[in-house]
Amino acid sequence: MAFSKSVQRLGVRALGHEAQVTDVRRLSASVVRVELHAARCAGVPFAPGCKIKVHVGDGEMRSYTPARIDPSVGEMDVVVFAQGDSAASRWVNGLQPGGTVRFLGPGSSVPAPQGHEPWAGFYGDETAIGLAEAIFAALPPGTPTLGAIETLAGETSAVSHLPLVAVPRGVDVGAGLAQHARTVALPEGPGVVWLSGEATSVLALREAWLERGVPRDRLRIKPYWSLRGKAHRKTLERTVLRQEHIA
Ligand SMILES: Cc1cc2nc3c(=O)[nH]c(=O)nc-3n(C[C@H](O)[C@H](O)[C@H](O)COP(=O)(O)OP(=O)(O)OC[C@H]3O[C@@H](n4cnc5c(N)ncnc54)[C@H](O)[C@@H]3O)c2cc1C
Image 1 (cartoon, rainbow, N blue to C red):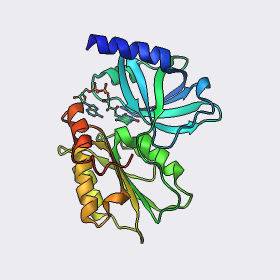
Image 2 (tube, rainbow, N blue to C red):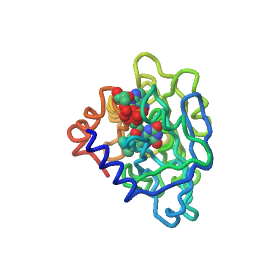
Image 3 (tube, rainbow, N blue to C red):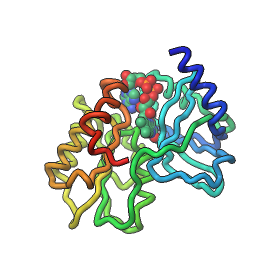
């Protein structure tokens, strides 16, 4: 483990980009929007839904999704959920304007919108706020949207900039999202729905949308973490979601 952390540290130093932190803003108590300026990334193509791998200290890397990108100047925002006393939480809670961040990427992760859609849905949790923003910004103007983001109770302000319902998390993680998916009124036509956030919730959402008659090839699925740990998320992506995986 110590060896792999050393390799990660060397890798991000040799191959990564350095970015300046230009702004840090709390969208809620535990959701932080970080604006970065990476001069060397000016002109680098960042597709909506791509990921970067950020060095959060001590050789630890974590994946994040640029919420907003201005490739003309190498500027991007990431929206980070600071959960518990974790490496990523300590990192983001310690960021200040003027600081630096190193990251690898961009790498492909979630399929971006492909032109006109009759409507678009998005479901996820705090970790997917940046993804929702990137996807919605890439939809043709006027596309009807629907969906929900689950947040900690009392932190629904984290979603107020998005055209999505904020669902406070109850004891049963993801239950409110699945309920919303089962009952929301649908516009006419074959929509496309992005599902992200916690892995077990994503599976339940996938079931809910299949039951509503949205075919699998209209679902864009990418679990970002799992209550049962990273190995569980990876296993799901290799097994039940593998043959279905789009990108
Ligand atoms: C492609 C991709 C893009 C991502 N983009 C974003 C993004 O834009 N913003 C963002 O906030 N996250 C994003 N994530 C999720 C983020 O990388 C993980 O949540 C990461 O594990 C957080 O690191 P940590 O140091 O907090 O916890 P870790 O040290 O990785 O894990 C410690 C413990 O916390 C648990 N845990 C991990 N994440 C959460 C969580 N969200 N809530 C509760 N418990 C958790 C783990 O299961 C483990 O038990 C993305 C993940 C992927 C795969």
